[in-house]
Length: 414
Image 1 (cartoon, rainbow, N blue to C red):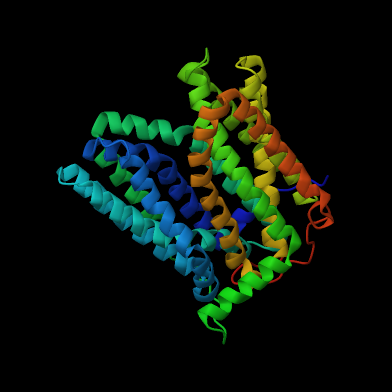
Image 2 (cartoon, rainbow, N blue to C red):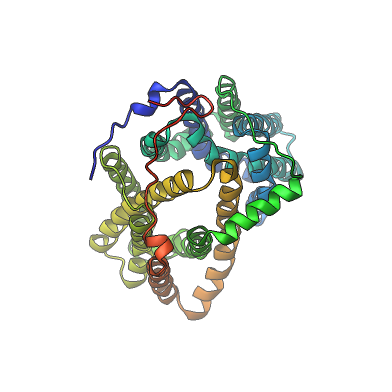
């Protein structure tokens, strides 16, 4: 395999600004769940309170995601991402002020979370589509790996930092810091000047063009469909039943935390390798990597032995990082640039629809058939679905697009 230069994208000013913005944003993203959960508990002790606030963000995202992809393609991804980050920051700041002042009510948090979800429905597709506009095509792997490295590092430090902030200064001030990261991330995008591709078609026409492309591109709809099922199995299996399995066994909370830590170590290790080695046949290796992500789900069903679970967790972390990079490269190199945010919106839609499905179905199944049995079957199904996608030639044969880099919206050829 060819070797790559991991820092090459940083030579391009637009990417540097985007990279700085995304890095700051990631800090807030990994702090927010902890801070928001404790803020909700300060406001209400109702059992459904946290779920209601989280659902208030997720449901509008699902409803508006496809329209958000159209807007990002039409109006300019940097512009949409700036607006999304700014409004998200202001809405989170409002939550922080209400909590700090001691006047927050549950409906305030639900309404502001819904606003955050609406703007995120446009921001997420814009974010996915902006990278090919700020680096040359032949540096896409390096750009994605740099972003992944930042994410891996922040994922380790972010939640713990948020917990310390909540303990030391309170959930409201932790949310205020999260709001500041959103606003700073927005301001860092101001130097990134990219145009949209508004054409003669209406918004509905653009939405139809996105659907036509999605349904006619076999590798795209097949992988998005598979990923929707896999996300449901992951959310319901590992993230919902996993802690229950740990709590009811010798693992306990400490063992569960160690499993997640080893998964993070696997992500970081794979990221460091991919900083040096070019990933060929992105979906072939990517779906094999995705299959590995099912190993700890199945392993938790079979055993609570750390000698089994920790290697499975590390391998799964490495595997999902290979998939993540392979998927990003497949999208960025093979989807026409003017349709990229719309195509990404279908991917995001599948992801967010799957989350509540998995969370709501796995618990009753575990109660009926036993948590060990459900985890075993979910893990095996995860591996089988991942590998089944490789039966399609469109998936396993998809290759990197090696065309000369060209001048594109500020990404200079070289």
